[in-house]
Length: 360
Image 1 (cartoon, rainbow, N blue to C red):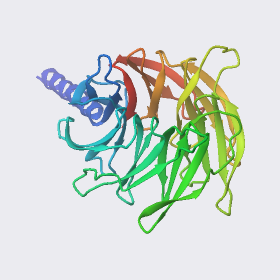
Image 2 (cartoon, helix red, strand yellow):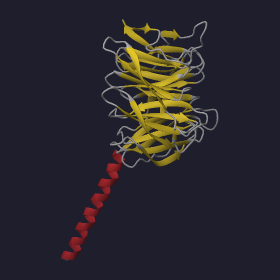
Image 3 (tube, rainbow, N blue to C red):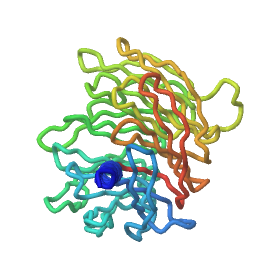
Protein backbone atom coordinates (compact mmCIF):
# COMPACT_ATOMS: atom_id res chain seq x y z
CA UNK A 1 0.00 0.00 0.00
CA UNK A 2 2.82 2.39 0.86
CA UNK A 3 4.51 1.57 -2.45
CA UNK A 4 1.28 2.31 -4.31
CA UNK A 5 0.88 5.68 -2.57
CA UNK A 6 4.54 6.48 -3.32
CA UNK A 7 4.00 5.71 -7.03
CA UNK A 8 0.96 8.01 -7.09
CA UNK A 9 3.01 10.77 -5.47
CA UNK A 10 5.79 10.37 -8.04
CA UNK A 11 3.23 10.45 -10.83
CA UNK A 12 1.71 13.67 -9.44
CA UNK A 13 5.14 15.31 -9.20
CA UNK A 14 5.97 14.25 -12.76
CA UNK A 15 2.60 15.54 -14.02
CA UNK A 16 3.09 18.88 -12.26
CA UNK A 17 6.57 19.19 -13.77
CA UNK A 18 5.23 18.44 -17.26
CA UNK A 19 2.38 20.92 -16.90
CA UNK A 20 4.71 23.57 -15.47
CA UNK A 21 7.07 23.12 -18.40
CA UNK A 22 4.20 23.24 -20.89
CA UNK A 23 2.61 26.39 -19.52
CA UNK A 24 6.01 28.04 -19.10
CA UNK A 25 6.69 27.47 -22.80
CA UNK A 26 3.23 28.74 -23.68
CA UNK A 27 3.93 31.90 -21.65
CA UNK A 28 7.03 32.48 -23.77
CA UNK A 29 5.04 32.64 -27.01
CA UNK A 30 5.02 36.18 -28.44
CA UNK A 31 3.28 37.38 -31.61
CA UNK A 32 5.26 38.12 -34.77
CA UNK A 33 3.87 39.88 -37.84
CA UNK A 34 5.46 39.46 -41.27
CA UNK A 35 5.34 42.04 -44.04
CA UNK A 36 5.71 40.64 -47.57
CA UNK A 37 5.88 41.47 -51.26
CA UNK A 38 2.78 40.05 -52.91
CA UNK A 39 4.00 39.83 -56.50
CA UNK A 40 4.73 36.08 -56.32
CA UNK A 41 3.19 33.67 -53.79
CA UNK A 42 2.44 35.90 -50.82
CA UNK A 43 -1.05 37.26 -50.17
CA UNK A 44 -0.44 39.97 -47.56
CA UNK A 45 0.53 40.29 -43.89
CA UNK A 46 1.19 37.05 -42.05
CA UNK A 47 1.05 36.24 -38.36
CA UNK A 48 2.87 33.66 -36.26
CA UNK A 49 4.26 33.18 -32.77
CA UNK A 50 7.83 32.94 -31.55
CA UNK A 51 8.94 31.06 -28.46
CA UNK A 52 11.48 33.24 -26.65
CA UNK A 53 12.75 30.22 -24.72
CA UNK A 54 13.18 27.63 -27.48
CA UNK A 55 13.72 29.92 -30.50
CA UNK A 56 10.99 28.16 -32.49
CA UNK A 57 8.48 29.79 -34.82
CA UNK A 58 4.87 28.64 -34.88
CA UNK A 59 2.67 28.08 -37.91
CA UNK A 60 2.57 30.88 -40.48
CA UNK A 61 -0.99 32.21 -40.96
CA UNK A 62 -2.42 34.93 -43.19
CA UNK A 63 -3.52 37.85 -40.99
CA UNK A 64 -5.03 39.89 -43.83
CA UNK A 65 -5.15 39.66 -47.60
CA UNK A 66 -3.68 42.94 -48.87
CA UNK A 67 -1.28 44.05 -51.60
CA UNK A 68 2.42 44.74 -51.01
CA UNK A 69 2.64 45.48 -47.26
CA UNK A 70 6.44 45.78 -47.29
CA UNK A 71 7.10 47.48 -43.93
CA UNK A 72 5.19 47.28 -40.64
CA UNK A 73 4.94 49.22 -37.38
CA UNK A 74 2.94 48.91 -34.14
CA UNK A 75 0.96 51.51 -32.23
CA UNK A 76 2.49 52.12 -28.76
CA UNK A 77 -0.17 49.95 -27.07
CA UNK A 78 0.13 47.25 -29.77
CA UNK A 79 -3.61 47.31 -30.41
CA UNK A 80 -3.13 48.58 -33.95
CA UNK A 81 -0.71 47.90 -36.78
CA UNK A 82 0.43 50.01 -39.73
CA UNK A 83 1.96 49.18 -43.10
CA UNK A 84 3.66 50.95 -46.01
CA UNK A 85 2.86 49.68 -49.53
CA UNK A 86 4.94 49.70 -52.68
CA UNK A 87 2.00 51.00 -54.72
CA UNK A 88 2.00 54.30 -52.83
CA UNK A 89 -0.31 53.78 -49.84
CA UNK A 90 -0.18 53.44 -46.06
CA UNK A 91 -2.70 51.34 -44.14
CA UNK A 92 -3.90 50.97 -40.57
CA UNK A 93 -5.41 47.90 -38.93
CA UNK A 94 -7.11 46.76 -35.77
CA UNK A 95 -5.40 43.70 -34.25
CA UNK A 96 -7.98 41.05 -33.40
CA UNK A 97 -7.72 38.62 -30.49
CA UNK A 98 -6.87 35.72 -32.81
CA UNK A 99 -3.99 37.67 -34.40
CA UNK A 100 -5.87 38.49 -37.60
CA UNK A 101 -6.11 42.09 -38.82
CA UNK A 102 -9.09 44.26 -39.77
CA UNK A 103 -8.42 47.14 -42.18
CA UNK A 104 -9.27 50.57 -40.77
CA UNK A 105 -7.91 53.04 -43.32
CA UNK A 106 -5.90 53.13 -46.53
CA UNK A 107 -4.38 56.53 -47.28
CA UNK A 108 -2.48 57.98 -50.23
CA UNK A 109 1.29 58.26 -49.66
CA UNK A 110 1.71 60.77 -52.53
CA UNK A 111 4.48 58.84 -54.27
CA UNK A 112 5.13 55.46 -55.78
CA UNK A 113 6.80 52.86 -53.55
CA UNK A 114 6.14 53.71 -49.91
CA UNK A 115 8.92 51.70 -48.30
CA UNK A 116 8.95 52.51 -44.56
CA UNK A 117 6.63 53.59 -41.76
CA UNK A 118 7.42 54.73 -38.21
CA UNK A 119 5.14 55.71 -35.32
CA UNK A 120 5.69 58.52 -32.80
CA UNK A 121 4.17 57.44 -29.51
CA UNK A 122 4.35 60.97 -28.07
CA UNK A 123 2.53 62.94 -30.76
CA UNK A 124 0.18 60.40 -32.40
CA UNK A 125 1.81 60.68 -35.79
CA UNK A 126 3.10 58.28 -38.43
CA UNK A 127 6.00 59.03 -40.76
CA UNK A 128 6.05 57.34 -44.17
CA UNK A 129 8.91 57.54 -46.67
CA UNK A 130 8.54 56.92 -50.40
CA UNK A 131 11.47 55.54 -52.38
CA UNK A 132 9.90 56.33 -55.74
CA UNK A 133 8.56 59.75 -54.81
CA UNK A 134 11.50 60.90 -52.70
CA UNK A 135 9.17 62.22 -50.02
CA UNK A 136 8.56 61.94 -46.31
CA UNK A 137 4.97 62.30 -45.11
CA UNK A 138 3.35 62.90 -41.72
CA UNK A 139 -0.01 61.22 -41.06
CA UNK A 140 -2.06 62.09 -37.95
CA UNK A 141 -3.25 59.01 -36.03
CA UNK A 142 -6.83 59.16 -34.76
CA UNK A 143 -8.06 57.86 -31.39
CA UNK A 144 -9.42 54.70 -32.99
CA UNK A 145 -5.99 53.93 -34.54
CA UNK A 146 -6.96 54.97 -38.05
CA UNK A 147 -4.83 57.27 -40.23
CA UNK A 148 -5.96 60.67 -41.46
CA UNK A 149 -4.71 62.02 -44.80
CA UNK A 150 -1.17 63.39 -44.76
CA UNK A 151 -0.89 66.69 -42.88
CA UNK A 152 2.66 67.37 -44.12
CA UNK A 153 4.58 66.26 -47.21
CA UNK A 154 8.33 66.89 -47.41
CA UNK A 155 9.72 66.67 -50.95
CA UNK A 156 13.49 66.07 -50.95
CA UNK A 157 13.87 66.26 -54.72
CA UNK A 158 15.80 69.11 -56.32
CA UNK A 159 16.33 70.15 -59.92
CA UNK A 160 19.74 68.48 -59.86
CA UNK A 161 19.19 65.46 -57.59
CA UNK A 162 16.56 62.73 -57.43
CA UNK A 163 15.63 61.84 -53.87
CA UNK A 164 14.95 58.28 -52.67
CA UNK A 165 13.69 58.61 -49.12
CA UNK A 166 14.09 55.16 -47.59
CA UNK A 167 13.41 55.31 -43.85
CA UNK A 168 12.47 57.62 -40.99
CA UNK A 169 12.63 57.47 -37.20
CA UNK A 170 11.24 59.63 -34.44
CA UNK A 171 13.41 60.54 -31.47
CA UNK A 172 11.52 62.61 -28.89
CA UNK A 173 10.64 65.86 -30.76
CA UNK A 174 12.94 65.07 -33.69
CA UNK A 175 12.27 63.25 -36.94
CA UNK A 176 15.25 61.85 -38.86
CA UNK A 177 14.95 60.78 -42.50
CA UNK A 178 17.48 58.77 -44.54
CA UNK A 179 17.61 59.74 -48.22
CA UNK A 180 19.39 57.10 -50.27
CA UNK A 181 19.21 59.18 -53.45
CA UNK A 182 20.70 62.41 -52.13
CA UNK A 183 23.09 60.71 -49.66
CA UNK A 184 21.79 62.62 -46.67
CA UNK A 185 20.27 62.25 -43.21
CA UNK A 186 17.76 65.05 -42.56
CA UNK A 187 16.62 66.30 -39.17
CA UNK A 188 13.18 67.81 -38.57
CA UNK A 189 12.13 69.51 -35.32
CA UNK A 190 8.59 69.50 -33.92
CA UNK A 191 7.25 73.05 -33.41
CA UNK A 192 3.61 73.82 -32.63
CA UNK A 193 2.59 70.31 -33.67
CA UNK A 194 4.33 70.55 -37.07
CA UNK A 195 7.74 69.34 -38.21
CA UNK A 196 10.23 71.81 -39.65
CA UNK A 197 13.52 71.03 -41.41
CA UNK A 198 16.39 71.97 -39.10
CA UNK A 199 19.28 71.51 -41.51
CA UNK A 200 19.90 70.37 -45.07
CA UNK A 201 21.85 67.34 -43.82
CA UNK A 202 23.19 66.53 -40.36
CA UNK A 203 26.60 65.47 -41.75
CA UNK A 204 28.33 65.57 -45.13
CA UNK A 205 28.45 62.06 -46.59
CA UNK A 206 31.21 61.60 -49.16
CA UNK A 207 30.71 59.73 -52.42
CA UNK A 208 27.51 57.81 -53.15
CA UNK A 209 27.12 55.27 -50.32
CA UNK A 210 23.29 55.41 -50.26
CA UNK A 211 22.14 55.73 -46.62
CA UNK A 212 19.19 53.37 -46.21
CA UNK A 213 18.28 52.53 -42.59
CA UNK A 214 19.69 53.68 -39.25
CA UNK A 215 19.66 53.00 -35.51
CA UNK A 216 19.69 55.62 -32.76
CA UNK A 217 21.01 54.93 -29.26
CA UNK A 218 18.56 55.38 -26.39
CA UNK A 219 20.27 58.59 -25.26
CA UNK A 220 20.21 60.02 -28.79
CA UNK A 221 23.96 60.60 -28.77
CA UNK A 222 24.85 58.20 -31.62
CA UNK A 223 23.28 57.34 -34.97
CA UNK A 224 24.47 54.34 -36.99
CA UNK A 225 23.60 54.44 -40.70
CA UNK A 226 23.83 51.44 -43.01
CA UNK A 227 24.69 52.36 -46.61
CA UNK A 228 23.07 50.28 -49.37
CA UNK A 229 25.54 51.09 -52.17
CA UNK A 230 28.69 51.59 -50.11
CA UNK A 231 28.25 48.35 -48.09
CA UNK A 232 29.30 50.25 -45.00
CA UNK A 233 28.13 51.71 -41.70
CA UNK A 234 28.58 55.41 -40.98
CA UNK A 235 28.79 56.19 -37.25
CA UNK A 236 27.56 59.66 -36.27
CA UNK A 237 27.92 61.43 -32.92
CA UNK A 238 25.79 64.27 -31.59
CA UNK A 239 27.80 67.21 -30.26
CA UNK A 240 26.95 69.17 -27.12
CA UNK A 241 25.61 72.05 -29.22
CA UNK A 242 23.15 69.78 -31.04
CA UNK A 243 25.15 69.46 -34.26
CA UNK A 244 26.51 66.14 -35.54
CA UNK A 245 29.81 64.75 -36.76
CA UNK A 246 30.96 61.53 -38.45
CA UNK A 247 33.26 59.50 -36.18
CA UNK A 248 33.65 56.17 -37.98
CA UNK A 249 33.17 54.36 -41.30
CA UNK A 250 33.26 50.55 -41.43
CA UNK A 251 32.72 47.94 -44.14
CA UNK A 252 29.97 45.37 -43.60
CA UNK A 253 31.62 42.80 -45.88
CA UNK A 254 34.05 40.01 -45.14
CA UNK A 255 37.50 40.85 -46.54
CA UNK A 256 37.38 37.72 -48.73
CA UNK A 257 34.08 38.62 -50.43
CA UNK A 258 34.40 40.14 -53.91
CA UNK A 259 30.88 39.79 -55.35
CA UNK A 260 28.04 42.29 -55.69
CA UNK A 261 26.26 43.40 -52.54
CA UNK A 262 23.74 45.91 -51.25
CA UNK A 263 23.09 46.48 -47.56
CA UNK A 264 19.59 46.58 -46.10
CA UNK A 265 18.87 46.77 -42.38
CA UNK A 266 20.61 47.69 -39.10
CA UNK A 267 19.82 47.18 -35.40
CA UNK A 268 21.47 47.66 -32.01
CA UNK A 269 21.42 44.91 -29.40
CA UNK A 270 19.15 45.47 -26.39
CA UNK A 271 22.10 46.57 -24.22
CA UNK A 272 23.58 48.61 -27.12
CA UNK A 273 26.94 46.85 -26.81
CA UNK A 274 26.63 45.31 -30.28
CA UNK A 275 25.43 46.37 -33.71
CA UNK A 276 24.08 44.18 -36.52
CA UNK A 277 23.73 44.86 -40.26
CA UNK A 278 22.43 42.77 -43.18
CA UNK A 279 24.15 42.17 -46.53
CA UNK A 280 22.15 41.22 -49.63
CA UNK A 281 24.52 39.48 -52.03
CA UNK A 282 27.02 38.24 -49.49
CA UNK A 283 23.82 37.10 -47.73
CA UNK A 284 25.19 37.63 -44.26
CA UNK A 285 24.73 39.42 -40.98
CA UNK A 286 27.71 41.57 -40.00
CA UNK A 287 28.27 41.81 -36.25
CA UNK A 288 30.05 44.77 -34.65
CA UNK A 289 31.14 45.49 -31.09
CA UNK A 290 30.55 49.06 -29.88
CA UNK A 291 33.03 51.10 -27.91
CA UNK A 292 30.69 52.46 -25.24
CA UNK A 293 33.03 55.37 -24.48
CA UNK A 294 33.47 56.90 -27.93
CA UNK A 295 30.76 55.21 -30.03
CA UNK A 296 33.04 53.64 -32.64
CA UNK A 297 32.47 50.06 -33.80
CA UNK A 298 34.67 47.08 -34.63
CA UNK A 299 33.57 44.15 -36.79
CA UNK A 300 33.78 40.78 -35.01
CA UNK A 301 31.72 38.37 -37.15
CA UNK A 302 30.19 37.70 -40.57
CA UNK A 303 27.67 34.87 -40.56
CA UNK A 304 25.54 33.39 -43.36
CA UNK A 305 21.81 34.11 -43.16
CA UNK A 306 21.07 30.57 -44.42
CA UNK A 307 18.95 32.10 -47.16
CA UNK A 308 18.98 34.61 -49.98
CA UNK A 309 18.50 38.40 -49.88
CA UNK A 310 18.07 39.39 -46.19
CA UNK A 311 15.99 42.53 -46.62
CA UNK A 312 15.04 42.99 -42.97
CA UNK A 313 15.84 41.43 -39.60
CA UNK A 314 14.86 41.98 -35.98
CA UNK A 315 15.75 41.04 -32.41
CA UNK A 316 13.13 39.25 -30.32
CA UNK A 317 11.77 40.91 -27.12
CA UNK A 318 14.10 38.89 -24.89
CA UNK A 319 17.19 40.03 -26.79
CA UNK A 320 18.36 36.41 -27.01
CA UNK A 321 17.48 35.80 -30.67
CA UNK A 322 17.88 37.49 -34.04
CA UNK A 323 15.46 36.66 -36.88
CA UNK A 324 16.16 37.34 -40.56
CA UNK A 325 13.62 37.77 -43.38
CA UNK A 326 15.19 36.24 -46.50
CA UNK A 327 13.12 37.58 -49.38
CA UNK A 328 14.33 35.49 -52.35
CA UNK A 329 14.65 32.14 -50.55
CA UNK A 330 11.25 32.50 -48.84
CA UNK A 331 12.40 31.71 -45.33
CA UNK A 332 12.93 33.23 -41.90
CA UNK A 333 16.21 32.26 -40.23
CA UNK A 334 16.59 32.20 -36.46
CA UNK A 335 19.90 32.83 -34.65
CA UNK A 336 20.77 32.75 -30.97
CA UNK A 337 22.73 35.71 -29.58
CA UNK A 338 25.63 35.22 -27.19
CA UNK A 339 25.02 38.12 -24.84
CA UNK A 340 28.63 38.13 -23.69
CA UNK A 341 30.24 38.31 -27.14
CA UNK A 342 27.34 39.49 -29.31
CA UNK A 343 28.06 36.74 -31.84
CA UNK A 344 25.34 34.73 -33.59
CA UNK A 345 24.71 31.00 -33.95
CA UNK A 346 22.25 29.62 -36.49
CA UNK A 347 19.41 27.59 -34.96
CA UNK A 348 16.63 26.91 -37.48
CA UNK A 349 14.55 28.40 -40.27
CA UNK A 350 10.91 28.48 -41.38
CA UNK A 351 9.49 28.63 -44.89
CA UNK A 352 7.54 31.88 -45.41
CA UNK A 353 6.31 33.48 -48.66
CA UNK A 354 8.50 36.49 -49.66
CA UNK A 355 9.21 37.87 -46.16
CA UNK A 356 10.59 41.42 -46.16
CA UNK A 357 9.73 42.77 -42.69
CA UNK A 358 9.51 41.21 -39.21
CA UNK A 359 7.69 42.94 -36.34
CA UNK A 360 7.59 41.92 -32.68
